[in-house]
Image (cartoon, rainbow, N blue to C red; front, top):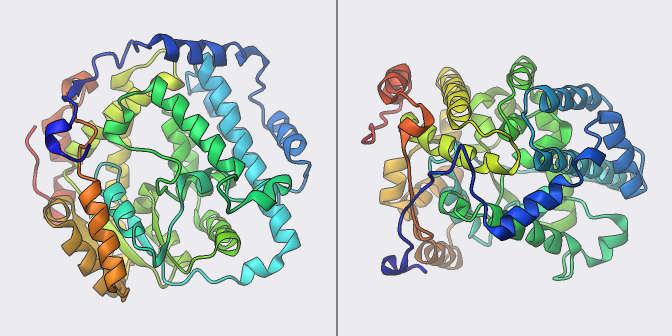
Length: 425
């Protein structure tokens, strides 16, 4: 599939507002919807169900309950959940609550986890569609580094009854992740053109930030301005500390030494990020903001078919174009909070022109060795993961209602500060 001559033809996603499902996808959507009336999207009910599923009842610090209650309210009143969306939201929140219970159970049995050191991580802070996924996966191909695979991000701590299978091919978390991804491949067959996901695909730590119910991740479930405003109004340092504790638990359970991490949320949280990981090397990725808005708006409008009804591509894209402006302006404002000797700006065009050369520069900055085995692993990843290997998506800003000229003008200060070239639109 790596040969460019075998790549699928580009596709135009002309059903964003009125999704067309294959018979197999329709069966999945209708099957999930059949359970919607029985779902209780209620904080107390979700917590009770998580306790029943795990046999545990200690969630750790209980300050999260206020945030969970607000999130549930936002999903009900602002999220425009479809029947399947209601089921998936309850499932997602339920899993996060189970993860809290499982983490606290592990910490109670092994308090020495708090003494685990997360030493000098390399952290990518950049918006989706700016090369972060390729950079993250490329560096993660180095066997000397520790990363967070998708299955582990979904359930970092195993159920006690499954603990003996952890670290083996029979770990049930692997099969559960495979099943969920297979279902999404049927419902969203073109999603991998925009963002490839596999069980072992390296994922973002924003998924474990969600265990403390304070993250912008929930905004990807649906535009929720009340949740956005609440999250932005609160200091995120306690939640970054919680995330660090989860990483310590992951390291305790599966080993590893130096982490390579990534999340777009870090762009608007440079203060909490560097206060929590004081010896981190932070890599700030940059691309033409208009390209990011169009690409991300398309991706989220496409994925909304799994959860929202009706789907309004212009509302989704408009919300996220505004949201990305907020994030990038925060990065512009706070960039100098990152120590110069511990940070680097990575331009998309320069990275795409010489990805291995950029990684060498990053390793030099981070004082990370690159022995022959690491260099070979990185080169092999590049050789087998060409860009657009699953085919391209044709992006259309007019379908999303994005005014290219106005958005470009609004972000001119950001683009000039980081010398980001405009892409043709």
